[in-house]
Length: 318
Image (cartoon, rainbow, N blue to C red; front, top):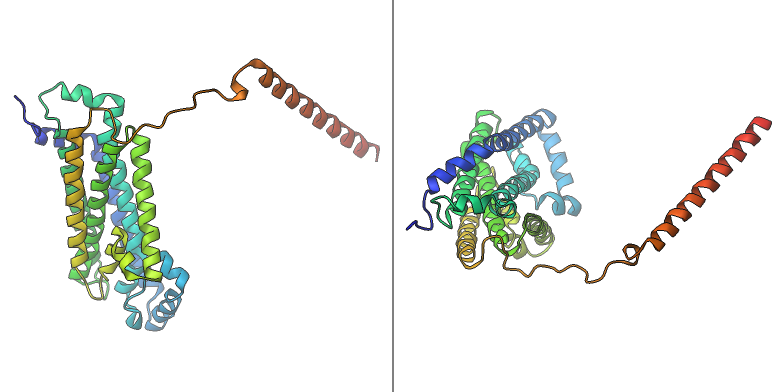
């Protein structure tokens, strides 16, 4: 009798083979974008006066709501500027990567019937989810390492080793968290659109909650996964404890997702499916309304052509 996690390694290799190009593109895009921004900041704000001018701009409440509460503004180095202005948006991109990856392998494969075919093989019921989570952890870990080491390799002043590794680790932790959340939503919704919609809604709520916390109560910031990433204060104070909270939360959501996956039927969701309308719209109940609409459009079009001919005739007369 096969166990619930039978052939997880084989399934992990299969997922990696299917998505190797997507994964490489995502990691390359995130890493290249981060490195280019760091280089551009070093070129655009070469002097202390220019950096302090930007620091004054970052004190604006609108900028605080957009990118997070400023830190290190008294000595706004390239590292502080980089982390303050770009870590949040790069974390959102990492979250999107994980949402799409998890939804594709958990809910989309069930919706298309692929998972039913795979389970006919000697695979465990939880094998696909376990393999997907393993791949997500590995992808985010690799992304964090590549981005962190790449930032330090740029040899830009104030981009020290600890801060660079923390920058990459923050992105990896946010990615793993949203992978776990998407896995949970995949158990609640019965189709891939619902899974992605709930995950993106959660991402939007996280952003709004962080903005509200940065403008008011900091407790709200700590309650948002994106806010926890900004609380790390990379390149200034280098706080690692928010990532421990993110990781622990991700583990909790993963365990909950595994538990719920065991309780539901294949292809079904735990949330009730929204029923459609019992009766068709008036526009679909017969040919009368449709013919009237078509005739009205024909009459309006004829009048437009007639008016256009009159205008053309008068212009020729003049």
